[in-house]
Every structure is written in C-alpha cells, then in structure tokens.
Length: 530
Image (cartoon, rainbow, N blue to C red; front, side, top):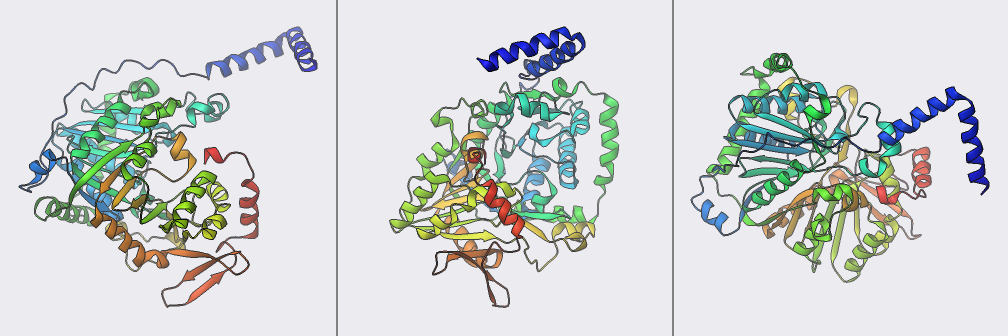
C-alpha cells in the first residue's frame, strides 16, 4: 500500500512539472514501443523450386540414396572445412542456401561473400540467413548484395534497436535471449556442410589473434532432404526479416562498388587461390573417384518455434538425438566447447559411469574458454564428475603447431601475430555405441532450452572408431588431464611433447583473481542462461 501511495504522489509531482512529465512520458512510450518488432512484411522473392544435382560418380550412389543412406566426410581440418564450403559454392548449378549464427566482416567472411556473389552472377539463386546477434558491421555489405536479383538475405530474430541494443536487453530480453545458433550450407538441395564453425577467420586458422579447434561434416544423400526442409522452416518463419525491411532499400551503385572492392580477390595464380584450387581438386577426387563412406544418417534440428519458447518436445533437437542414439550401453565420448552439465546432467553421466560405461569428456580450460562465465558454472561439477569415474580433460589455451597454416602460406602473414598463441576448443560432437553426432549443439542449458541448433547423427562404427582414435592420439597433447588427489582435490596433469608431466594444483595459467571471480560468479542464479 505504501508503495502504491508513493507511486501516486510521484505521478502527481511529475504532472505538476510539465517538462519532466513530457520527458518521462516520451521515455515510457519509447520503452513500450521497444517491446515488439514491426509486423514482418510478406516475403515474395523465394518461389523457385529446388533442383537436385549429382555430385558423385559412385555408380551405387542413386541406389544408396533410394535405400535411405547418406555419404559423409568428417572435417576436423580447418582448411579442408573452408575449402568444402567453397567447393559447394563454386560448383552449385541452381541454388545455395546458407544459415549461420555469426558471419564476420573479416577475411574469411568477405571471401565467402565474394564467392557467393560470383555464384549469383552465373545464375545461382543464393539465400543467406544470418542471426542478428552477428551485429551491424556487415549491414552495408548485405544491403549492397541484396540489390542482386539472384541474392536474397534475411536476418533472424532482429533487434528492434539495432544500433542501441541495450534498449532491447531492457525491454525484450526474453525474446532476444533466444538465438539461431545454426551453421549450415546446402548446394542444389543435394549436398551440405554442418558443424560447429561460424563464418569467421578464427574458425579456419586464419586469425592473427587466436584459433578455434572445431569439427564439421560434409554429407550427400538422404539426410540433405531434411536439412533443406529445416532451412525452409527458418527462412519462411515470421522471425526472418528481409534486409530491405530492416536496413532499407539499397542502390545499384552500392552493388557495383562492392564488386569493385572484391575484384582484388579475383586475382589468379596467387598463393591463396593455388591453395584453394588444390583443395577443390582433392575434394573432387574424394567425392567422385574414391570410395566414400555411406551410412544411415539423420539431420536433427530445433524448430524455429524454440526461439519463441513454443517448441514441442518432438521439435527439440535433444529429444530427437536421444530418440535416435538411445542410452549408452558401452561408452560415451563427449566434446563440448561450453560444458555445463547441470545437476541433472551430472547425475545422468555419473549413473552411466557407475554402471560400467566408459564416459570421456573434453571441454575448455578456464584460460582457454572464450566465454569465461560459462566456465564458472561448469567448474562446480568437476569434482562430482571425477568422483563418479568420468574421465575429464580440459583444452589447453596454447597449442604447439609444427607447421604453418594454409592462411600463413597463402598470405605470407605470421600467426600468431607478435607472439600471440591463443587456442580455444569450439567443437561439439559426441559418440554413443556406434552413433556419432556432429553439429552446433553444446552440452549446456543454452543449447538445450534457448538457442536453436542443428546437427547430423551418423550411424557408423567406422566414424566412431575414427573419433576414438583421434582422441586417443591427441588428447594428452592438447588437453590437461584432470584427476582427484588423495585429499579429494582436483589436480591437472600437463603432458609435454618431451615426455615431461607437470602437475598443477589449480587451473593452469590462471590468476588468483580469475579463480576468485569464477568461484564468485558461480553463485549467481543464472545457470539456466549458460
């Protein structure tokens, strides 16, 4: 009652002061208007039918696809991963559909946009869907590209105040906290790439600051049908706004200016182009001449309704994955850049381990994690996991490289620049008894409940064996091994290339302040957002 009476007195006082009343009223009106986006205008450009094309010379390919199989190639190599996307773009004949969480205005981002523009120039219909968490740095470029008759761009779940986003955080947090975390490239509704990599230099060993270690998968066949269906669901969703509506109509001169800017990238006989051409040849050989693995595969994805908090259980990726992969009977290997198992997940993994199932987890160490707050909420589950027999590894922040990256060779630059050598894990994949998931989904509440995610589940003992062998070979080189000492405290074992093993009694390479902050933040009631 006192609060209500005080509020009435405040209103009366503001009314008596007309100037303050006008200003306050304006602020309230702006706030209320910021609570919703304008109605999405009717989309009218994307009406062409998808035309499939043949990408393999395998005489059994058509029969395998009829039998519900999918050909696949795991892409743990950063250069091969960017090369696969360029291969799809350069060889597409009819359509290119792409959706990404992040598409940066950097060397890789502009190289990909340039390749897409070239495809549009030769008559390929290009549709690009980007989450608005990406920011406004590409707005000028996207506005120019949208002038091309074969290039259509939409922004998913846009901020209303795109230049003053704090207003959206104040009035629309529940809406903008749901992001499209999908990463997908599809050519001619026939062949696709998905995984953990966004379109930015650090995901492809081309950043002078730090590099992400990641995993993608190239696939061709039955599973692509579902991938294309998912893209259409997001493309036609009411949360997908055209660039014309958000940014305004561009001018033809802007497109011509952009083409002039990209002309320098058209140079032939450059180290970069020679490297890319060699990769294209390699992929063509793999896809056309060599035997390639075929298996039953399932493209899984959250429905765009998840961004509104309205998705049904069967529309959620994790429900689909659980249904396909089932409960582990022998072993489970989990690689997740952001790992927040929660009490429920910790209990689940612990029960598996107690039942004799081998559980091995790789995530980022404190210093390697590019989102340190996530580590705060993961760290409190480390002891329970270790006590229950889960093998736990944390990615090192600095990875020794024995050879120059493709980007260093192509450009002559040195990575890391000025002695910088930062590394971070960004991969998201796990395997369960002969079934492997590779995609954008992290083992955390954000991926489970807030963001939309995609991925591919492959039923392949061979792929699982490849991943297990990869982890067995490299884990001790790239990660700290965590164990409990006789007093129940966590120790970190660092295995060096010379055979020396160094024991750490706290998070390696971290400061007291970092560790204190991590512990302090872990008490905040925001785990559901991690």
